[in-house]
Length: 139
Image (tube, rainbow, N blue to C red; front, top):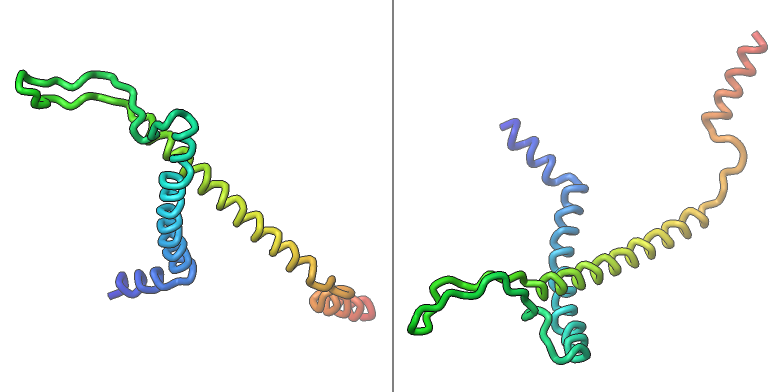
């Protein structure tokens, strides 16, 4: 039972729960960004460059093998460059969004530290140590 109890304590710790929530939200955010790139950003870019759809952009390495009836025996070997371009756009947008979020969080944390009043005089520990030192000097 020790292993199960230890695992339960680990799994219900705050950091693990926060990490799980972050991963779930990150996955959902990734889907939103992928849709933004694929459905909103890439069509106008494709239109500008001649109406092409980037996911269809492929470099053929080897043609498909077709028999006499037109049936494909072996599929063509291609480099799917368009999918890679799409993934790069996804990454750039996600990285930019995360950068902005971190920047805003840092600005808010900086304001919090600026708002804290500076401590007046030495801390309580320093005062006590000073008193002890002074008492020892007198003896």
